[in-house]
Length: 83
Image (cartoon, rainbow, N blue to C red):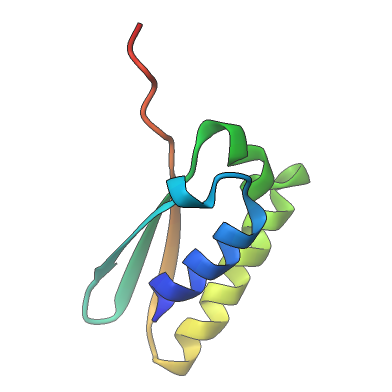
């Protein structure tokens, strides 16, 4: 449920939606969402002063309240290409 919500929001914001990776790790009371986006799109997800990322986390928090779950969004840095 949370994974689908994040995929929809993030893929509508980035230039390369096919390269967005979302993993969901579910516990009893906590859900951790791991989000990986291309390096070129990190700025679009973070936003100016982190406002976009904070808004996405607020949406997840509110969605988690309905299911009595704490939802944590972790932004994972994309792997660096080897030279």
